[in-house]
Image 1 (spheres, rainbow, N blue to C red):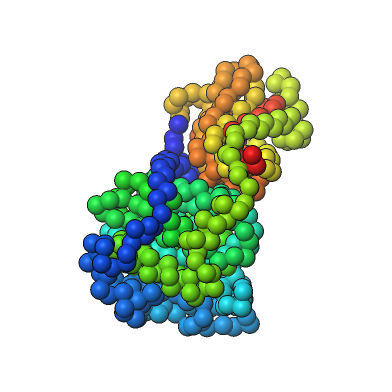
Image 2 (image 1 turned 135 degrees about the vertical axis):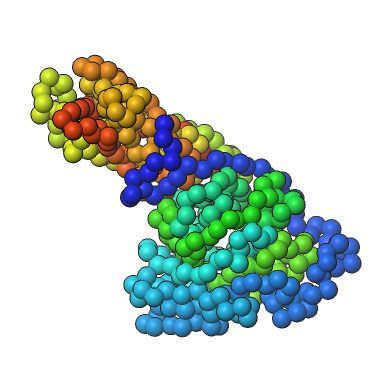
Amino acid sequence: MASERRRPTGKMQKMNRGRQRRGRALAAALGIAATLACAHVAQCSGAGPGGVSADLALWLRADVGLTVEAERVSKWEDQSGNGRDATQSDSAARPYLATLNDLPVLMFRNSVSLDFDANFLVDSDYTIIVVDAKRVNRQSNYYIGGSAQSAYSNLILGYSGLVTIRQTDTSEHLDAEIGPVAAERFVWAAYLLDGNDGRRILWNGAEVASDASPRALQSFPGAAIGRVSAYDHFFNGYIAEIIIYTRALCDAELYALGEYIQSTYGAANLRRQAQDDAAQNPTFSKREFVFEEVLGMSDVSDFGNNMGSDHDLHIYNEDYAWSHHLPDDADGFLEAKISIYAGDVDSCESTNCGEWDLVYVNGVEVGWLVGEENQWSTTTLDIPNPDVVFGSGDVEIEVDVDVYHLPGRDFGVVINRSTLTIRYWKWVED
């Protein structure tokens, strides 16, 4: 399978998953500066957020530095002193200025975003902190991303599922399960990369995931807030503050920033609040289910299934397209396959000897139909990383018939049935 080939309209690509959780609480034994080895603790009285100023690279606050036109934000000025403002020249694509809990926020929805120059993150360690609030629960709800699809050339941060957050460089991603999150309530996440120790994710001050993947970004084109243009994902929610450092902060600094965020956004103690919620809410377990949807020919096209008729065979300029549904109760997707029952598939391993009918799922090539002349056959293909590929809408299937069309040779195929099988999980109250 030509795994690098993509349709121009595709949304997603393959990602290799790496997941590990540790779940130890941040600053459980902090005594704050005296008991921790941190070279920058002395600078926690500086002018940066929480007094943490060393290597502050970008600082965006919704209460200052906004250029607003017709209640929409065209510029979000960097408060770090580095001049890395986030901007949007397209008036129809600008986020909205709003308030949440009487505090100013930028509201992102539909197709709005702000662009910023993220070259300072290339070949660098980092700590990225985002203070946000959900508007709705949805898959692939990322608040930072870029335009590249190649490994180590994009940094995607935000909600990968209804109860998970993700840090990925499009090579492998780190997921953290955070449980159900109430809408319109301020929360914060910190994403760290340390060239010696790897990656970490903190949620409301507690470490919820880590791994040993220390490789830095090689590039970060098309960086944006509220949009991942590589996969056409947009954030739906509120953002109050974004803070970025060009190094991995130590625990004492993270604690100081947590105190600053708690004080600024009205929560008595976000770390304690997260623990209180776990104690007060019912206990949930993560359980797996299987979903299957079968579509007959009438759902796929207006053609019949008689191989003997030229009218029923689709040739190189008559591609197939149809849509499958997703289970409406899924919190995440574990595995997915698409099975296509087709006739007269003259498949061949070479591009110059037979028929290549390439199959795409939401724009990602997953393989090609396999079969023999004048025979019916079933081709079953794995859908890579379905929790990324699926997004939040229907699953769009395309079959590009006879993609390497040879002059004078019109190979044709007829599709009779399509089956989507998904293994997914959801939270179930015990």
